[in-house]
Image (tube, rainbow, N blue to C red; front, side, top):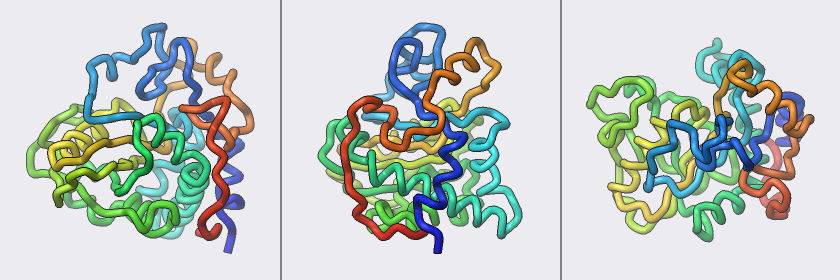
Length: 253
């Protein structure tokens, strides 16, 4: 069986790790024209304590392709992409979950869940559930499908308080909410509202890819300044001094 490092290593050749700084949204790490927040994050979302994208997902490039293929490709191909993305998530969490917890102001996350699919009929079979609940050792024992899509119609890319509903009370729980892609953040924000209403003490969001376009404004030049190859030892919240976490889980997916 290939190890987590073996499965994730090829992704280091094309992932681009977000870094905080001027012209970077302080919430979602989008590249801005100067303001501290992008226009999607300009309105505060008090239900979300912190957001970490593992990498930028650049339109039509390799990570963007993988994040689409693990859901839409034929069976064997989709499963292969799911294993690779599970390894990316596992490797990041093993080294940097503590960084996100500190950014969120908590000691640890007591429960891990995923943002449901926008289509209720697809959610039960969504491969992100299998990745987080079965394949990734750092999350599988804390995972619960805490949310479900409601029957309320919601326009695409709109934050809506009733888009999702909690399956259980979450009183006092600190939640790590995982999604594959952040575009506008509407799905994660809607999910965080439902978790907050169910009594969650704090919610932090981890996404595999923060979507953006290379040809928008000066994105290409700014992306060119990011570490190449991808630097697994640093994350978006602690670009220069991350936590040092030893491998605490079996290393095969």
